[in-house]
Amino acid sequence: MNTPFYIARRYLFAKKSTNAINIISTISVAGVFVGSAALIIILSVFNGFEEVVLKMFNTITPQIVISPVQGKTFDPNTAYFNDLKKEKGIYSYTEVLSENALLRYNEKQSVGLVKGVSTDYLKNKSLDSITIDGAFKLENQSLNYAVIGSAIQTFLMVNTTDPFNPLQVFSPKKKNNHSGSINPADDFTILSIPVSGVFEVQQDFDNLAIVPLRFARKLLDEPVKISSIEINLQNGVDADKFKAEIENKIGKDFEIKDRIQQNKVLYNILGSEKWAVYIILTFILIIAIFNIIGSLTMLVIDKLKDIAILSSLGAGRKLIKRIFLFEGMMITMAGCISGLVVGLVFCLLQQKFGLVKMSQDNLVITSAYPVALKWKDFLLVFLTVSVFSFMASALSSNLSVKKINHLNQDL
Image 1: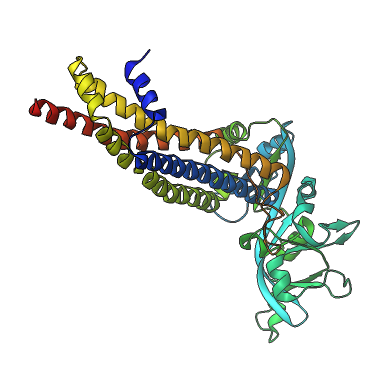
Image 2: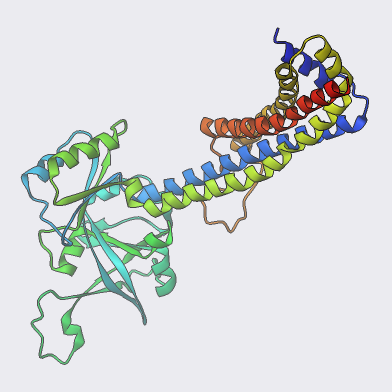
């Protein structure tokens, strides 16, 4: 058996001459226990929020978007795009024509992005989950309908149950044949469309009006070209591999983006917030870990006789130093492992029973705090505690070597 580890284990459970040593050791374990449990629980909650937010964004964000590098539109009726449309791995292939326009309802008006989409857009079965009013319906036989974001609905006070009061959409005409007209309305294409529903995701999307592609073509006077192509893949198809294949074949005139590239700011914010919380809680955990210095210092003083006996029996400085190093590591690791276990149990209970509820006014579609467990977080917390506990224990174990020097000098 490893001699330093055996002696350290005996010291950990043996009765000390000074009760303060036991108290400080218990406080050290409790501090690491609470810090480890809190860290893993909060990281798991951030994972849960991240999954909920990304799920909402992914509802309206396609897996792959193809858009032109230069200009706003391109012709989708090329040999490559016609072949791409027939790929077996594609679940939905949506042609998009979008442009900013003036939206008017009753006496109120606002600028919003009008996004015309082809019929494949409605293959997304998750659209109903973000619909907060009415229904996500764009066409009914020959009739066109619009689905608007909550920001537009709030500003214009649109009533989705009033079919006789449609939304008016104004777009500047490409060719102005009325340059001598005194009526400014002659310079705009003005179309009306009833609103069938309202959706809510996030501010960047909520200023959006989704309409049928045929309506957008008429509004923008664009019979052929489109702004982008949105692609969603069948289950099991590797999006990164599929994107790489498109990039190899399509050339440099087009830009292909996956979901991370489309929502780069969102992914950066989610990642930076999680790391910021990790750093803050780690500093608190470090304070708890370094309590071990006081505990080991008092233990070294308490065990001076033992150190003298071990030294006289031939135990070297390295062996004695390792005894107290193991002692400190065992104290902190006991708190860390128990904290991780309790944190895991709490997260599992939160997932199953939703013990901690959220405010009814929250914007996330869930009644309890979401939790998602990742093994990397457990490994991260364990390594964090291990590194700092080793540093604290190493500092304290050096004291035992100094005590040996003092004892030798006394002798």
